[in-house]
Image (cartoon, rainbow, N blue to C red; front, top):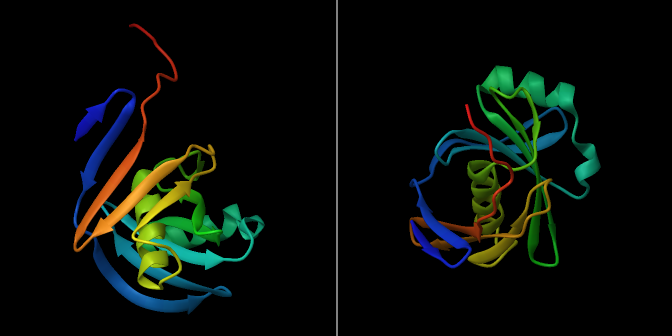
Length: 145
């Protein structure tokens, strides 16, 4: 990883396709491991996110569940994360999986802005088998024990 002022960039693990695209519950899913397993559906509207469906898919496939919307060359993501068992504000490996799916379908460029539910602007870049993830560093809380 490199840090330049308030921006950090890191190389993610090499992604692995677990399963070719398949149809289930009205969506086309892609199953890949970008550090942890993820299901990705490209959708027209992120309001289709459904917690009960995500929970069902998470249990069946032992994977995080992501809905991605492509708009103006950018990706907007909603992620249901295993372990949390709910939607999270941001999941780096989920955004990476969504980016890879969209890039493989030629829906976005090899370097693209990705926005999770937190609405942070993050950048994912693909170069051959290398994935780079870049975003601003910010302190969200401080605590002591």
